[in-house]
Amino acid sequence: MLIDDVERTIRQKPGLTATQIAAELFGLDGYGERVRAMCQALHASGRIERDGDGRPGSPFKFYPGESEVRTAPKSKGRRGSGGGGHDLKY
Figure 1 (cartoon, rainbow, N blue to C red):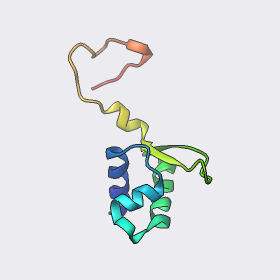
Figure 2: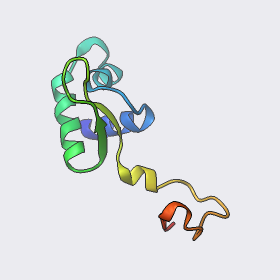
Figure 3: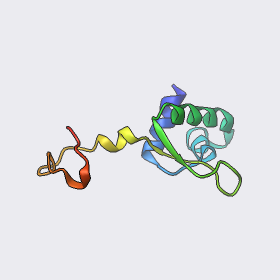
Figure 4: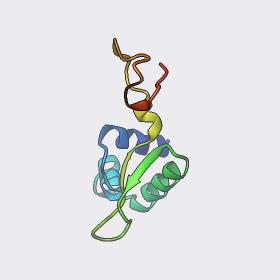
């Protein structure tokens, strides 16, 4: 599905704009409006984060959502360390 391709591209290359994501997925064929709509839906559902104002000169740039940060691979010595007040469960 297109929405999964958009999310995968954001995970692989964080910080892209919708236009850049469309170019990654479709080349010069565009699909910018469809990709923008998918980014908006992913952001509304909390699956991705965005930065910027959404205007020329400061377009939205998209990043993996908060859940992506929490799924870091296990590493020895980190479980239950309580570092920074975050109690991540693996």
